Length: 161
Image 1: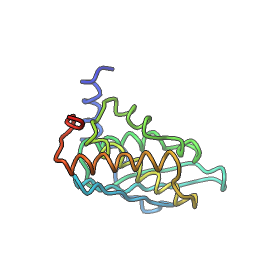
Image 2: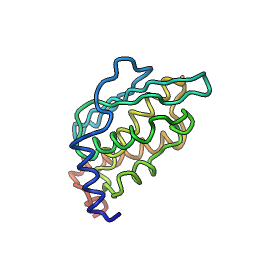
Image 3: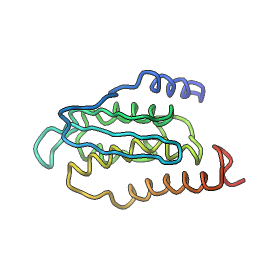
């Protein structure tokens, strides 16, 4: 798929996001905000199965976000629905960026990864665990890139100039 096709896919997910809306019977939820651009997103999960063998039976998200963030949330919701908790936990930065199919640039990286953060916060709260290790560093990296570029007034593609 070429980059234009990926952009078209992003716009499709932005205009008609999958799994958008609050979930009344959610088992858990996770909320994340990007204060630099105003993206604000909440993921809702309905978990099913026995402890240790749970799966994501239902997923939805809600909030106000840019095209990259909304498309990322829509694609991530498609990806995690029906997955076992362990499989869903394994989804990380590279998978989300791969689904988007474009390099969002350092300033928009946080927009692309904010849904992953909200999803992981929901999942980990349900599992009674803390986000740790590589996952925490990926989220911190996205936060730091967004803060550093906003501090210097840099737009996408201008970092490092």
